[in-house]
Amino acid sequence: MEATKRTFENYGDIFVVDSIEEAVNAVNEIAPEHVELLFNDCESVLSQLTNAGAVFVGEYSTEPVGDYFCGTNHILPTCGTAKFSSGMSVGEFMRGYSVIKYPESALKTNADYIIRLAESEGMKAHALAVRVRK
Image 1 (cartoon, rainbow, N blue to C red):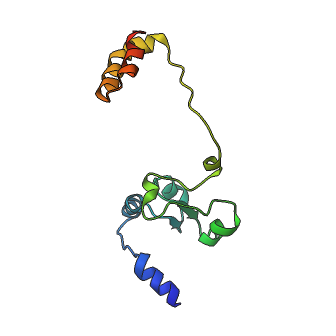
Image 2: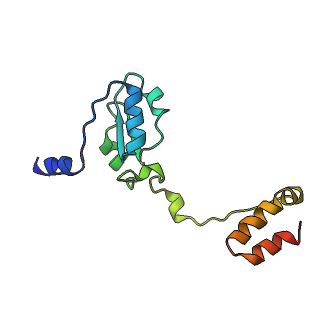
Image 3: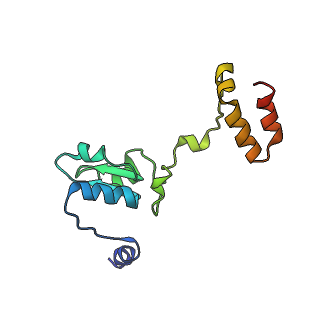
């Protein structure tokens, strides 16, 4: 009980809101690690959430189910970082690369913009690579 009390004092909050909309806005602003939805119509609320590490839907989808048993990742964004990050996934352990297939017509249309950006960064060779193809 003491550990729970200390955790809540250091990291816990209770928000009293007047509407589900206000609750959704608060969750999206705070971007918590965990959100539990306990509504009659959880799906409509779920579709409005944009910033959370993991969302537990319904009274039987407890946080320990997600952490220990159902297969979702236990490494989640904390302290509001769900605004710009997701939970760790298998993708973190895979290597990939980008493929760019830009047509001649698009390069000619956008060459001046690309050249201007390259020059603004001092990347003269990048600007030249586009200029000679323009």
